[in-house]
Length: 420
Ligand code: UD1
Picture 1 (tube, rainbow, N blue to C red):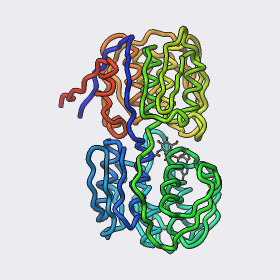
Picture 2 (spheres, rainbow, N blue to C red; picture 1 turned 90 degrees about the horizontal axis):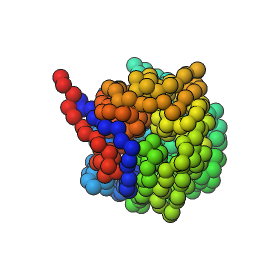
Picture 3 (cartoon, rainbow, N blue to C red; picture 1 turned 90 degrees about the vertical axis):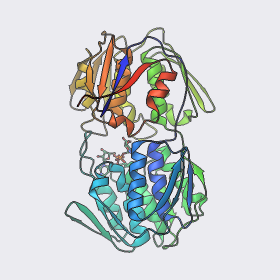
Picture 4 (tube, protein in one colour; picture 1 turned 45 degrees about the vertical axis):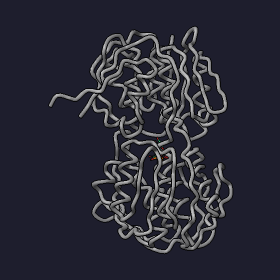
Protein backbone atom coordinates (compact mmCIF):
# COMPACT_ATOMS: atom_id res chain seq x y z
CA UNK A 1 0.00 0.00 0.00
CA UNK A 2 1.24 3.46 -0.83
CA UNK A 3 0.29 6.99 0.17
CA UNK A 4 0.99 10.44 -1.21
CA UNK A 5 2.86 13.12 0.64
CA UNK A 6 1.91 16.58 -0.59
CA UNK A 7 3.31 19.93 0.42
CA UNK A 8 0.98 22.92 0.30
CA UNK A 9 1.90 25.53 -2.26
CA UNK A 10 0.67 28.83 -3.62
CA UNK A 11 1.92 28.37 -7.06
CA UNK A 12 1.56 25.88 -9.84
CA UNK A 13 2.08 26.58 -13.51
CA UNK A 14 2.38 24.95 -16.88
CA UNK A 15 0.55 22.54 -19.12
CA UNK A 16 -0.83 19.10 -18.50
CA UNK A 17 -1.78 16.70 -21.24
CA UNK A 18 -5.09 14.95 -20.62
CA UNK A 19 -5.38 11.18 -21.01
CA UNK A 20 -8.17 9.23 -22.66
CA UNK A 21 -11.39 8.97 -20.67
CA UNK A 22 -11.54 5.91 -18.42
CA UNK A 23 -15.33 5.98 -18.43
CA UNK A 24 -15.39 6.01 -22.22
CA UNK A 25 -12.65 3.40 -22.62
CA UNK A 26 -14.40 0.84 -20.39
CA UNK A 27 -17.57 0.38 -22.49
CA UNK A 28 -15.57 0.85 -25.69
CA UNK A 29 -13.38 -2.10 -24.72
CA UNK A 30 -16.46 -4.24 -24.03
CA UNK A 31 -17.61 -3.40 -27.56
CA UNK A 32 -14.95 -5.89 -28.65
CA UNK A 33 -17.44 -8.64 -27.67
CA UNK A 34 -19.64 -7.45 -30.55
CA UNK A 35 -16.79 -7.35 -33.09
CA UNK A 36 -15.92 -9.97 -35.67
CA UNK A 37 -12.50 -8.39 -36.19
CA UNK A 38 -9.61 -7.62 -33.87
CA UNK A 39 -10.51 -4.26 -32.32
CA UNK A 40 -7.83 -1.53 -32.29
CA UNK A 41 -8.27 1.29 -29.80
CA UNK A 42 -5.87 4.16 -29.10
CA UNK A 43 -5.68 6.70 -26.26
CA UNK A 44 -6.72 4.19 -23.57
CA UNK A 45 -5.55 5.41 -20.17
CA UNK A 46 -3.25 3.00 -18.37
CA UNK A 47 -5.14 2.88 -15.05
CA UNK A 48 -6.18 0.07 -12.71
CA UNK A 49 -9.83 -0.12 -13.85
CA UNK A 50 -8.78 -0.70 -17.45
CA UNK A 51 -6.39 -3.48 -16.41
CA UNK A 52 -9.21 -5.07 -14.40
CA UNK A 53 -11.46 -5.08 -17.45
CA UNK A 54 -8.74 -6.64 -19.64
CA UNK A 55 -8.32 -9.34 -17.00
CA UNK A 56 -12.05 -9.99 -17.05
CA UNK A 57 -12.07 -10.30 -20.85
CA UNK A 58 -9.03 -12.57 -20.74
CA UNK A 59 -10.84 -14.83 -18.26
CA UNK A 60 -13.70 -15.06 -20.75
CA UNK A 61 -11.25 -16.29 -23.39
CA UNK A 62 -10.37 -13.05 -25.21
CA UNK A 63 -6.80 -12.21 -26.18
CA UNK A 64 -5.38 -8.70 -26.07
CA UNK A 65 -2.26 -6.57 -26.13
CA UNK A 66 -2.04 -3.21 -24.38
CA UNK A 67 1.01 -0.98 -24.72
CA UNK A 68 1.55 2.77 -24.97
CA UNK A 69 -2.16 3.42 -24.53
CA UNK A 70 -2.95 1.31 -27.59
CA UNK A 71 -4.89 -1.95 -27.37
CA UNK A 72 -5.72 -4.76 -29.76
CA UNK A 73 -8.52 -6.99 -28.53
CA UNK A 74 -9.73 -10.19 -30.13
CA UNK A 75 -12.83 -11.97 -28.83
CA UNK A 76 -13.03 -14.58 -31.60
CA UNK A 77 -12.25 -17.40 -29.18
CA UNK A 78 -14.41 -16.17 -26.36
CA UNK A 79 -15.75 -19.33 -24.74
CA UNK A 80 -16.85 -18.42 -21.23
CA UNK A 81 -19.74 -16.15 -20.41
CA UNK A 82 -19.36 -15.90 -16.66
CA UNK A 83 -18.00 -12.68 -15.13
CA UNK A 84 -16.97 -13.83 -11.68
CA UNK A 85 -17.32 -12.01 -8.37
CA UNK A 86 -13.57 -11.78 -7.72
CA UNK A 87 -13.23 -9.36 -10.65
CA UNK A 88 -16.61 -7.62 -10.63
CA UNK A 89 -16.20 -6.69 -6.96
CA UNK A 90 -13.04 -4.75 -7.86
CA UNK A 91 -14.86 -2.63 -10.41
CA UNK A 92 -18.58 -1.98 -10.72
CA UNK A 93 -18.24 -1.10 -14.41
CA UNK A 94 -17.64 -4.84 -15.07
CA UNK A 95 -21.43 -4.94 -15.44
CA UNK A 96 -20.77 -3.50 -18.91
CA UNK A 97 -20.13 -7.02 -20.22
CA UNK A 98 -23.74 -8.02 -19.47
CA UNK A 99 -25.41 -6.47 -22.53
CA UNK A 100 -22.74 -7.52 -25.06
CA UNK A 101 -22.38 -11.10 -23.73
CA UNK A 102 -26.11 -11.70 -23.66
CA UNK A 103 -26.70 -10.30 -27.13
CA UNK A 104 -23.87 -12.36 -28.65
CA UNK A 105 -24.26 -15.68 -26.82
CA UNK A 106 -27.91 -15.70 -25.71
CA UNK A 107 -26.84 -16.37 -22.14
CA UNK A 108 -24.39 -15.17 -19.51
CA UNK A 109 -23.77 -14.90 -15.79
CA UNK A 110 -22.46 -11.71 -14.30
CA UNK A 111 -21.81 -11.20 -10.63
CA UNK A 112 -23.92 -8.44 -9.07
CA UNK A 113 -21.59 -5.54 -8.33
CA UNK A 114 -23.02 -4.72 -4.89
CA UNK A 115 -22.96 -1.30 -3.25
CA UNK A 116 -19.99 1.01 -3.03
CA UNK A 117 -18.73 3.93 -1.00
CA UNK A 118 -20.81 6.51 -2.85
CA UNK A 119 -24.14 4.72 -2.54
CA UNK A 120 -26.31 1.73 -3.28
CA UNK A 121 -25.95 1.92 -7.05
CA UNK A 122 -28.56 -0.61 -8.18
CA UNK A 123 -28.61 -2.08 -11.71
CA UNK A 124 -32.38 -2.63 -11.82
CA UNK A 125 -32.78 -0.42 -14.89
CA UNK A 126 -30.21 -2.45 -16.87
CA UNK A 127 -32.12 -5.64 -15.97
CA UNK A 128 -35.60 -4.27 -16.65
CA UNK A 129 -34.52 -3.11 -20.10
CA UNK A 130 -33.03 -6.51 -20.95
CA UNK A 131 -36.24 -8.20 -19.79
CA UNK A 132 -38.20 -5.93 -22.10
CA UNK A 133 -35.95 -7.17 -24.88
CA UNK A 134 -36.98 -10.73 -24.10
CA UNK A 135 -34.29 -11.85 -21.66
CA UNK A 136 -35.01 -14.14 -18.74
CA UNK A 137 -33.27 -12.73 -15.72
CA UNK A 138 -32.76 -14.54 -12.43
CA UNK A 139 -30.62 -13.56 -9.50
CA UNK A 140 -28.94 -16.62 -7.99
CA UNK A 141 -26.14 -16.74 -5.45
CA UNK A 142 -25.16 -13.15 -6.13
CA UNK A 143 -25.15 -13.57 -9.90
CA UNK A 144 -27.37 -12.16 -12.62
CA UNK A 145 -28.25 -15.21 -14.72
CA UNK A 146 -29.47 -13.95 -18.06
CA UNK A 147 -30.66 -15.93 -21.06
CA UNK A 148 -32.75 -15.56 -24.18
CA UNK A 149 -32.49 -14.22 -27.69
CA UNK A 150 -32.83 -10.45 -27.58
CA UNK A 151 -35.48 -8.71 -29.65
CA UNK A 152 -35.97 -5.03 -30.31
CA UNK A 153 -38.27 -3.22 -27.88
CA UNK A 154 -39.29 0.23 -26.73
CA UNK A 155 -37.55 1.11 -23.49
CA UNK A 156 -38.14 4.20 -21.40
CA UNK A 157 -35.51 4.55 -18.70
CA UNK A 158 -37.17 5.73 -15.45
CA UNK A 159 -33.92 7.46 -14.54
CA UNK A 160 -30.99 8.50 -16.68
CA UNK A 161 -28.26 5.90 -16.24
CA UNK A 162 -24.88 6.10 -17.98
CA UNK A 163 -23.69 2.49 -17.86
CA UNK A 164 -27.33 1.35 -18.12
CA UNK A 165 -27.69 3.22 -21.42
CA UNK A 166 -24.35 1.84 -22.64
CA UNK A 167 -25.26 -1.74 -21.75
CA UNK A 168 -28.60 -1.56 -23.55
CA UNK A 169 -27.19 0.19 -26.62
CA UNK A 170 -24.68 -2.66 -26.95
CA UNK A 171 -27.42 -5.25 -26.35
CA UNK A 172 -29.64 -3.63 -28.98
CA UNK A 173 -26.80 -3.66 -31.53
CA UNK A 174 -27.03 -7.42 -32.06
CA UNK A 175 -30.72 -7.84 -31.16
CA UNK A 176 -33.36 -8.80 -33.71
CA UNK A 177 -35.28 -5.77 -34.94
CA UNK A 178 -35.71 -2.17 -33.86
CA UNK A 179 -35.05 -0.91 -30.34
CA UNK A 180 -36.23 2.54 -29.27
CA UNK A 181 -34.54 3.94 -26.20
CA UNK A 182 -36.03 6.97 -24.46
CA UNK A 183 -34.48 9.05 -21.68
CA UNK A 184 -31.03 7.77 -22.68
CA UNK A 185 -27.90 9.30 -21.12
CA UNK A 186 -26.25 11.92 -23.36
CA UNK A 187 -22.81 11.87 -21.74
CA UNK A 188 -19.98 12.21 -24.30
CA UNK A 189 -18.90 8.68 -23.36
CA UNK A 190 -22.31 7.31 -24.43
CA UNK A 191 -22.21 9.36 -27.62
CA UNK A 192 -18.82 7.90 -28.56
CA UNK A 193 -20.12 4.34 -28.30
CA UNK A 194 -22.97 5.22 -30.65
CA UNK A 195 -20.56 6.86 -33.09
CA UNK A 196 -18.24 3.85 -33.13
CA UNK A 197 -21.23 1.54 -33.72
CA UNK A 198 -22.56 3.80 -36.49
CA UNK A 199 -19.10 3.73 -38.08
CA UNK A 200 -19.28 -0.05 -38.00
CA UNK A 201 -22.38 0.18 -40.18
CA UNK A 202 -25.01 -0.18 -37.45
CA UNK A 203 -28.22 1.70 -38.21
CA UNK A 204 -28.53 4.01 -35.21
CA UNK A 205 -30.47 7.26 -35.19
CA UNK A 206 -30.62 10.11 -32.69
CA UNK A 207 -26.96 10.05 -31.61
CA UNK A 208 -26.34 12.74 -28.99
CA UNK A 209 -30.02 13.06 -28.11
CA UNK A 210 -31.99 11.34 -25.35
CA UNK A 211 -33.88 9.22 -27.86
CA UNK A 212 -32.17 6.52 -29.89
CA UNK A 213 -33.44 4.14 -32.52
CA UNK A 214 -31.22 1.13 -33.17
CA UNK A 215 -31.78 -1.51 -35.84
CA UNK A 216 -30.06 -4.64 -34.52
CA UNK A 217 -28.10 -7.04 -36.72
CA UNK A 218 -29.93 -10.17 -35.49
CA UNK A 219 -26.78 -11.74 -34.15
CA UNK A 220 -24.34 -10.77 -36.90
CA UNK A 221 -21.07 -9.48 -35.43
CA UNK A 222 -19.81 -6.06 -36.48
CA UNK A 223 -16.65 -4.97 -38.30
CA UNK A 224 -15.53 -2.21 -35.93
CA UNK A 225 -12.98 0.27 -37.33
CA UNK A 226 -10.00 1.50 -35.26
CA UNK A 227 -10.77 4.57 -33.13
CA UNK A 228 -9.36 6.86 -30.46
CA UNK A 229 -10.91 7.27 -27.00
CA UNK A 230 -12.18 10.79 -26.24
CA UNK A 231 -10.27 12.86 -23.65
CA UNK A 232 -11.13 12.49 -19.96
CA UNK A 233 -13.28 15.49 -19.06
CA UNK A 234 -13.10 14.70 -15.33
CA UNK A 235 -9.31 14.51 -15.36
CA UNK A 236 -9.20 17.84 -17.21
CA UNK A 237 -11.61 19.39 -14.70
CA UNK A 238 -9.51 18.10 -11.80
CA UNK A 239 -6.30 19.75 -13.07
CA UNK A 240 -8.19 22.97 -13.72
CA UNK A 241 -9.32 22.80 -10.08
CA UNK A 242 -5.65 22.47 -9.11
CA UNK A 243 -5.09 25.79 -10.93
CA UNK A 244 -8.11 27.27 -9.14
CA UNK A 245 -7.19 26.12 -5.65
CA UNK A 246 -3.65 27.48 -5.92
CA UNK A 247 -4.95 30.49 -7.89
CA UNK A 248 -2.41 29.86 -10.65
CA UNK A 249 -2.55 29.65 -14.40
CA UNK A 250 -2.72 26.08 -15.66
CA UNK A 251 -3.44 24.86 -19.17
CA UNK A 252 -4.88 21.47 -19.98
CA UNK A 253 -4.19 20.17 -23.47
CA UNK A 254 -5.66 17.31 -25.54
CA UNK A 255 -9.06 18.05 -24.11
CA UNK A 256 -12.49 18.93 -25.45
CA UNK A 257 -13.79 22.23 -23.99
CA UNK A 258 -17.36 21.48 -25.15
CA UNK A 259 -17.51 18.45 -22.84
CA UNK A 260 -16.70 20.71 -19.89
CA UNK A 261 -19.12 23.60 -20.52
CA UNK A 262 -20.99 23.27 -17.20
CA UNK A 263 -17.74 23.02 -15.26
CA UNK A 264 -16.10 25.97 -17.02
CA UNK A 265 -19.18 28.12 -16.31
CA UNK A 266 -18.74 27.45 -12.57
CA UNK A 267 -15.06 28.44 -12.68
CA UNK A 268 -16.14 31.72 -14.27
CA UNK A 269 -18.82 32.27 -11.62
CA UNK A 270 -16.07 31.87 -9.02
CA UNK A 271 -14.08 34.67 -10.67
CA UNK A 272 -11.47 32.64 -12.56
CA UNK A 273 -10.58 33.49 -16.11
CA UNK A 274 -11.16 30.71 -18.63
CA UNK A 275 -9.59 30.67 -22.08
CA UNK A 276 -10.42 27.93 -24.53
CA UNK A 277 -8.90 26.98 -27.86
CA UNK A 278 -9.79 24.00 -30.00
CA UNK A 279 -8.40 21.36 -27.65
CA UNK A 280 -6.94 23.46 -24.83
CA UNK A 281 -8.34 25.12 -21.74
CA UNK A 282 -6.50 27.56 -19.46
CA UNK A 283 -7.62 28.68 -16.05
CA UNK A 284 -6.38 32.12 -14.99
CA UNK A 285 -6.10 33.41 -11.40
CA UNK A 286 -9.10 35.19 -9.85
CA UNK A 287 -8.78 38.63 -8.19
CA UNK A 288 -11.16 37.35 -5.57
CA UNK A 289 -12.43 33.75 -5.40
CA UNK A 290 -16.21 33.94 -5.10
CA UNK A 291 -18.57 31.32 -3.67
CA UNK A 292 -20.61 29.11 -5.94
CA UNK A 293 -23.85 27.12 -6.02
CA UNK A 294 -23.72 23.71 -7.65
CA UNK A 295 -26.39 21.15 -8.39
CA UNK A 296 -25.05 17.90 -9.82
CA UNK A 297 -27.01 16.39 -12.66
CA UNK A 298 -26.73 14.37 -15.83
CA UNK A 299 -24.85 15.71 -18.86
CA UNK A 300 -24.90 18.47 -20.01
CA UNK A 301 -25.40 19.50 -16.35
CA UNK A 302 -22.65 19.70 -13.75
CA UNK A 303 -21.07 16.22 -13.34
CA UNK A 304 -21.25 14.46 -9.99
CA UNK A 305 -17.71 13.25 -10.73
CA UNK A 306 -16.50 16.88 -10.29
CA UNK A 307 -18.46 17.54 -7.09
CA UNK A 308 -15.74 16.60 -4.59
CA UNK A 309 -13.08 18.63 -6.42
CA UNK A 310 -15.30 21.74 -6.45
CA UNK A 311 -15.99 21.30 -2.76
CA UNK A 312 -12.23 21.50 -2.16
CA UNK A 313 -12.08 24.57 -4.39
CA UNK A 314 -15.02 26.22 -2.57
CA UNK A 315 -12.92 26.09 0.62
CA UNK A 316 -10.83 28.90 -0.91
CA UNK A 317 -13.82 31.08 -1.79
CA UNK A 318 -14.63 34.23 0.07
CA UNK A 319 -18.10 33.31 1.36
CA UNK A 320 -20.57 30.45 1.53
CA UNK A 321 -20.99 27.93 -1.27
CA UNK A 322 -23.76 25.36 -1.60
CA UNK A 323 -23.40 21.96 -3.24
CA UNK A 324 -26.50 19.88 -3.86
CA UNK A 325 -25.59 16.26 -4.75
CA UNK A 326 -28.52 14.79 -6.63
CA UNK A 327 -27.16 11.59 -8.12
CA UNK A 328 -25.57 9.56 -5.35
CA UNK A 329 -26.86 9.45 -1.78
CA UNK A 330 -23.52 8.99 -0.09
CA UNK A 331 -21.12 11.01 -2.13
CA UNK A 332 -19.89 13.25 0.68
CA UNK A 333 -17.36 10.86 2.22
CA UNK A 334 -14.60 13.38 1.56
CA UNK A 335 -16.26 15.90 3.90
CA UNK A 336 -15.10 14.34 7.16
CA UNK A 337 -11.55 14.19 5.79
CA UNK A 338 -11.66 17.84 4.69
CA UNK A 339 -12.86 18.74 8.20
CA UNK A 340 -9.63 17.22 9.53
CA UNK A 341 -7.80 19.85 7.50
CA UNK A 342 -9.75 22.67 9.13
CA UNK A 343 -12.56 23.02 6.58
CA UNK A 344 -15.90 24.45 7.68
CA UNK A 345 -18.54 22.31 5.93
CA UNK A 346 -22.05 21.49 7.15
CA UNK A 347 -24.01 18.57 5.73
CA UNK A 348 -27.75 18.34 5.61
CA UNK A 349 -28.88 15.31 3.60
CA UNK A 350 -27.74 15.81 0.03
CA UNK A 351 -26.80 19.46 0.58
CA UNK A 352 -23.38 20.66 1.69
CA UNK A 353 -22.80 24.20 2.90
CA UNK A 354 -19.18 25.23 2.59
CA UNK A 355 -17.99 28.28 4.49
CA UNK A 356 -14.89 29.22 2.56
CA UNK A 357 -11.92 31.40 3.35
CA UNK A 358 -10.67 29.50 6.44
CA UNK A 359 -7.01 28.51 6.51
CA UNK A 360 -6.46 24.84 5.70
CA UNK A 361 -3.86 22.88 7.63
CA UNK A 362 -2.02 19.79 6.50
CA UNK A 363 -3.23 16.48 7.95
CA UNK A 364 -3.29 12.74 7.41
CA UNK A 365 -6.39 11.97 5.38
CA UNK A 366 -7.97 8.85 3.93
CA UNK A 367 -9.34 8.53 0.41
CA UNK A 368 -12.72 6.80 0.19
CA UNK A 369 -13.49 6.75 -3.52
CA UNK A 370 -11.94 7.82 -6.77
CA UNK A 371 -13.07 11.44 -6.98
CA UNK A 372 -12.94 11.98 -3.20
CA UNK A 373 -9.24 11.12 -3.45
CA UNK A 374 -8.61 13.87 -5.94
CA UNK A 375 -10.45 16.39 -3.73
CA UNK A 376 -8.07 15.52 -0.90
CA UNK A 377 -5.05 16.06 -3.12
CA UNK A 378 -6.43 19.44 -4.14
CA UNK A 379 -7.06 20.43 -0.52
CA UNK A 380 -3.55 19.28 0.41
CA UNK A 381 -2.12 21.54 -2.29
CA UNK A 382 -3.86 24.50 -0.64
CA UNK A 383 -3.10 23.52 2.98
CA UNK A 384 -0.28 24.82 5.12
CA UNK A 385 2.32 22.09 5.67
CA UNK A 386 2.76 18.53 4.47
CA UNK A 387 -0.33 16.32 4.16
CA UNK A 388 -0.47 12.58 3.69
CA UNK A 389 -3.24 11.10 1.57
CA UNK A 390 -3.75 7.41 2.35
CA UNK A 391 -5.62 4.62 0.51
CA UNK A 392 -4.73 6.08 -2.85
CA UNK A 393 -5.45 2.84 -4.71
CA UNK A 394 -8.75 4.58 -5.43
CA UNK A 395 -6.85 7.23 -7.39
CA UNK A 396 -4.90 4.65 -9.32
CA UNK A 397 -8.21 3.31 -10.62
CA UNK A 398 -8.79 6.41 -12.67
CA UNK A 399 -5.94 8.92 -12.92
CA UNK A 400 -3.05 8.15 -15.25
CA UNK A 401 0.44 9.32 -14.19
CA UNK A 402 -1.03 11.52 -11.50
CA UNK A 403 2.16 12.31 -9.55
CA UNK A 404 4.16 12.94 -12.72
CA UNK A 405 1.50 15.30 -14.07
CA UNK A 406 1.29 17.22 -10.78
CA UNK A 407 5.09 17.36 -10.47
CA UNK A 408 5.33 18.85 -13.96
CA UNK A 409 3.05 21.64 -12.75
CA UNK A 410 5.46 22.33 -9.87
CA UNK A 411 3.66 20.45 -7.09
CA UNK A 412 5.68 18.78 -4.36
CA UNK A 413 4.13 15.35 -4.31
CA UNK A 414 5.76 12.02 -3.50
CA UNK A 415 4.44 8.47 -3.37
CA UNK A 416 5.69 6.52 -0.38
CA UNK A 417 5.14 3.05 1.04
CA UNK A 418 2.88 2.71 4.06
CA UNK A 419 4.63 1.17 7.04
CA UNK A 420 3.38 -2.36 7.64
C1 UD1 B 1 -21.38 6.38 -14.35
C2 UD1 B 1 -19.92 6.71 -14.21
C3 UD1 B 1 -19.66 7.40 -12.88
C4 UD1 B 1 -20.57 8.62 -12.74
C5 UD1 B 1 -22.02 8.25 -12.98
C6 UD1 B 1 -22.95 9.46 -13.03
C7 UD1 B 1 -18.85 4.96 -15.48
C8 UD1 B 1 -18.01 3.71 -15.48
N1 UD1 B 1 -19.16 5.46 -14.30
O1 UD1 B 1 -21.72 5.47 -13.31
O2 UD1 B 1 -18.29 7.80 -12.84
O3 UD1 B 1 -20.45 9.13 -11.43
O4 UD1 B 1 -22.16 7.58 -14.25
O5 UD1 B 1 -22.53 10.35 -13.99
O6 UD1 B 1 -19.18 5.48 -16.53
N2 UD1 B 1 -29.53 4.01 -10.98
C9 UD1 B 1 -30.61 3.23 -10.62
N3 UD1 B 1 -30.79 2.03 -11.26
C10 UD1 B 1 -29.95 1.58 -12.23
C11 UD1 B 1 -28.86 2.39 -12.60
C12 UD1 B 1 -28.68 3.61 -11.96
O7 UD1 B 1 -31.39 3.60 -9.74
O8 UD1 B 1 -30.17 0.51 -12.77
C13 UD1 B 1 -29.31 5.32 -10.32
C14 UD1 B 1 -27.99 5.38 -9.55
O9 UD1 B 1 -28.11 4.84 -8.25
C15 UD1 B 1 -27.71 6.87 -9.55
C16 UD1 B 1 -28.24 7.32 -10.91
O10 UD1 B 1 -29.16 6.31 -11.33
O11 UD1 B 1 -28.47 7.51 -8.54
C17 UD1 B 1 -27.19 7.50 -11.98
O12 UD1 B 1 -26.35 6.35 -12.00
P1 UD1 B 1 -25.63 5.85 -13.32
O13 UD1 B 1 -25.69 6.90 -14.37
O14 UD1 B 1 -26.14 4.50 -13.67
O15 UD1 B 1 -24.13 5.70 -12.84
P2 UD1 B 1 -23.08 4.65 -13.37
O16 UD1 B 1 -23.40 4.34 -14.78
O17 UD1 B 1 -22.93 3.53 -12.40
